[in-house]
Image 1 (tube, rainbow, N blue to C red):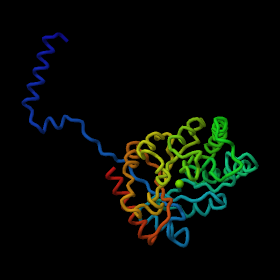
Image 2: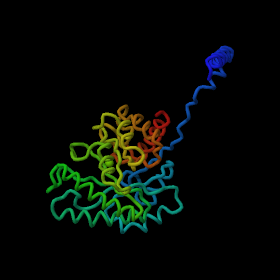
Image 3: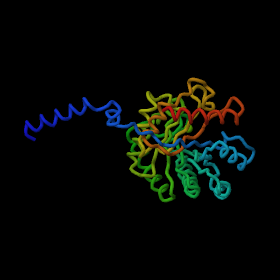
Image 4: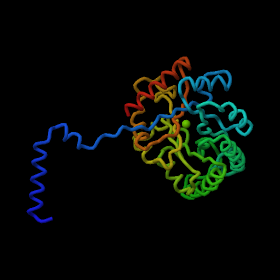
Length: 299
Ligand code: MG
């Protein structure tokens, strides 16, 4: 553009700006788009009140909660029971919480126990349409355990690769859960779990965050953002002081920093209750659902 034309155009623009009513200028500013990512809540079986599976699912449905998380132990024998119970309901199975024998970093026969039982659970999880089976590489007390070395990390990634590929064949995944250093010093940050999942090089290996263990994180927001949508497959939640039901620890139970990340990521997987309870279970769960929906709106 020639200098003269440029000047004329600029002057015309300036004149228009001077004359334009304020409302017109405001409408030119980029609009803040409302985040419509839904909060999908889920209850673990042991958290849900009710004497039978049907009663538990009725309670979940009455709160508009759409997820149900069960333990992995004996899961193969429960596939038909669970699939039938969920038929016709607006409830899906969430993740499967552990339940295997042995552990993946064992130096003895416990590794074989892990391989056998974990694969049984993964197969059942696939038949139930579950998003994945939660696992921890090794709890602090589990022995004999491979040493915390680079070789062990490489070994873990190789073993997870095999497991992840098997899970994909079954239509599900394996989900690494970081805990706190008191329970599992080996894996305690969401970003580290995501990095191991990446290095395992299988789309069947994912990670999760548990708001209870995430008290070791410097930022809930950064932890979830570091994992990102590609790796973050599940979330656990509890109150932040004593691991009771969200809300039972009062002002400590602020999840908005983490929720903001989940909303920005467009995370539509489950936020699942894994927690104890001090008050009347039905009452505190009802209040917790209300609290979390409010904080999700505010995040
Ligand atoms: Mg957990």
